Image 1: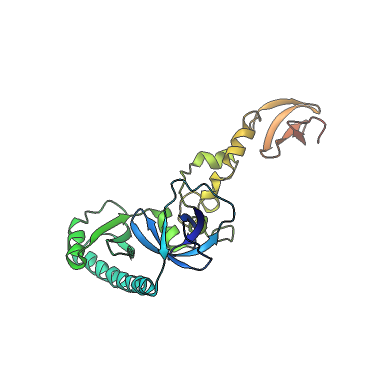
Image 2: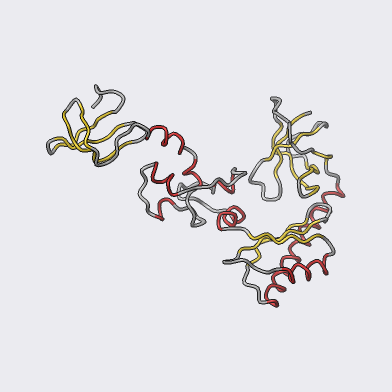
Length: 259
């Protein structure tokens, strides 16, 4: 069993699937997912044998008929999105529908929407089911999911991590910013979605480990240069600045010989 990386419609993330047949990069294939069959493109062929446990299967190489069906699904999903938005307006629902997507075999039609509060969309679902005669799923997504759907550029100058490679959105807390000694300025620690930056979680464990035996700002400590008050700390370098007799000295926690 060989492992392949595939991408879907958005083309931004690579997901691992397993397959018995020999596929090559840029082949279009039909894959098995939790939502049914989907049309995808081979983006990578892994030389090393990855752990294939719990990976979904590549069913077959896509045929011309499969490709035509996929393109028809995309076109019909655009019409479904317009119809859904019209129903939302008619029903007076306070929600914004972002996109629509058919599964490959059209066993499900999924709509993602955002709203400031919970929305009773049962009548909307009934109207859509009456038109499309398939399972309708209306999924309310948050600000971070919206950013992942739309994409954009982060304050680092790169494409949003959630759009490019994050498969799972971690819980981010303000304590992570505090642990990393960051200024709690929303323009500095919030992402394009208005929520805390996902990258705060990337190195947080290193900061937490280094903080365990570091003094805090305001502590009075003894150093080879004398006793003084900690005025700032450099967590990753395990260094602090100490005010000693009206002079600020660098003090490395792990090596008293460094200054």
